Image 1 (cartoon, rainbow, N blue to C red):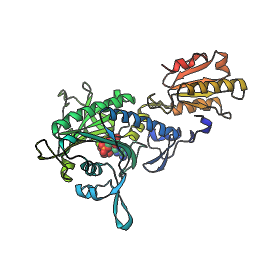
Image 2 (cartoon, helix red, strand yellow):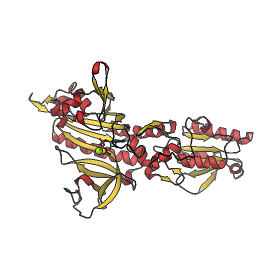
Image 3 (cartoon, rainbow, N blue to C red):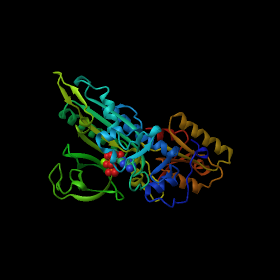
Image 4 (tube, protein in one colour):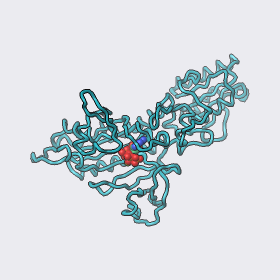
Length: 414
Ligand code: ATP
Ligand code: MG
């Protein structure tokens, strides 16, 4: 992509209402633009990151036999009346034609349970796991912190259906592992911890995945030895580490980026969702649900991966792998060498953002590259060519090195 043609540009002005690092940097770097409180437009750079996160999540869900579907965001209120959750504060209500009552779904148990009921009848049909990646709507009391707490936000929600609790427990552990793999792949592995949270009426615990960061909204109590934590809500009933019994838990700040839950029969009972077992006897279906927030995760990554110059994207989710800065492009010889390098990168399928602007100073181009935060910066200029080729610098390092035009590609592809 040529920066000169990119829709969405960097801005030197700090947005006056940016209440968090992610809101400030993502807006200034041209990734998102706020529509209304808690609702954002994703510009090309921002959508690329969101899509990269979603695709990693998708791959890991597919590996554990999750089947992707897409449910409607807007449905009838009926399912919510059935479960009694239609009075939930965060539920957005709409009026349809003929006075029908509609909702914008904040989560999809009320939709997925009756849907699954249309296809799953016998023990032979189970287990099944279905998921979607979609925008959710919640009328949050206080939308805040950029992408961290939105009123419209992106979620991956997986639901699993089982013949019995043992099978639910088996699959739950598989999902837990898949989640750790996701956090590892998106660059949050080392600072994301399994956190024991309240399990509601039907199971002892639910599990949150909490990313440690000083600006986090949640307080969790971490066992430094096991790297597991206990959520503030249950610290009174669970004062020690659930893994090793250690009673010296440390209070730390964190952001919830995922939440998995054994629903057991809470929703299958409400909808009378039963299957017939091998003896032809009716049994109630056991369910699990597993949420992950791609948009909140994107914001969280910015909260933890930045410096005073801008964002530092982990390479697995970066909008582009390479930020190619061309300087002195009014010189035809330099321009043609820069153009050739850009083409070489494209030909090798290396995703590159090429700052080909003619009317912009070198200083601004460097500042924009740091703000946007792609992992590898290449500079081709009169000076770099005199020194023997192209300058390569990683966003997260200070030092740079010159490589010849012939070898530069091999330094990027490993
Ligand atoms: P919270 O306690 O932070 O309000 P929650 O426990 O209600 O979140 P879940 O229903 O478990 O959230 O949703 C699954 C995931 O969706 C969360 O782990 C989080 O990553 C994401 N998420 C939830 N609410 C929001 C929101 N308002 N904005 C952005 N992401 C959200
Ligand atoms: Mg939660």
